[in-house]
Length: 331
Image (tube, rainbow, N blue to C red):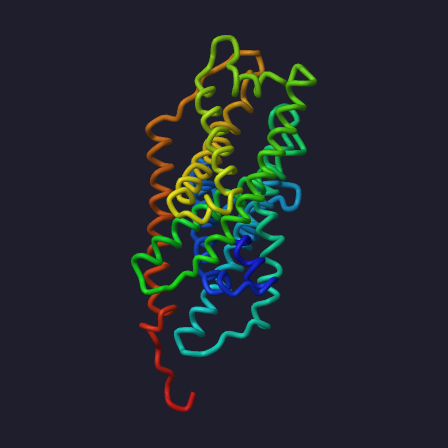
């Protein structure tokens, strides 16, 4: 959402300003999914009361998980208030006050960055895990999020345009694609810096990176996945970098799918698993998700898709003017 908010409200880029609402609704959906994933990771959802102020003990500010709860719920509240205030005003055929929501808009920009920063810090502070204990982790989280998130929005915007009467200007889609190119370029640069540091120094902490890209002691389960992710990211970058390619919807959609898949692999199995390789006693365990883990993950993704669909079902008629609420006489 922040990639739409900045050009829309800070630089007043009209084609994106007209559709920024859908990005904010997607942010509401994504944060809800993040909170669901945290509940799953806790093992038993009823434990969540321990993280709540007053009735539980948040251990704020010493606990990083408490910071995660604050930034996620704060960003959820900010986007919820902005999007539903705008929808409320539109549904009553009134102009919304940009001056009223501008403070929230300005706060939402650094707040969005803080989400990925705090998430990176959850891993970053674990000094016993050298693969995660790297200063470059937080910038890479931000760069990869600014690559894959907007790519998903480009696909959604095309679907919305096809199934509704909402007119989404090609200029908005192509400008988002251009911004994605910069984010992917930064992500690949940071990856190259990390790759150089690990392999050129040849320290004892090289093992996790070596396991990912070349295998370690015959264990190569993730090697094809990681090289595929790197190939996806580079291919997508080249497509987004070319004005001709990114303004052709066939190649644009291919690039969007590639960057979403590439980042999902890179920030999923490519981030979590190697942090535990090798183990504390030097063992190497090949991990693959169980059917329970896969079904829970798919369930949360399906929940997110359902929430966003319902939000669009509500927002699109208001946006197009098909749904309006009549004010009572005298108001």
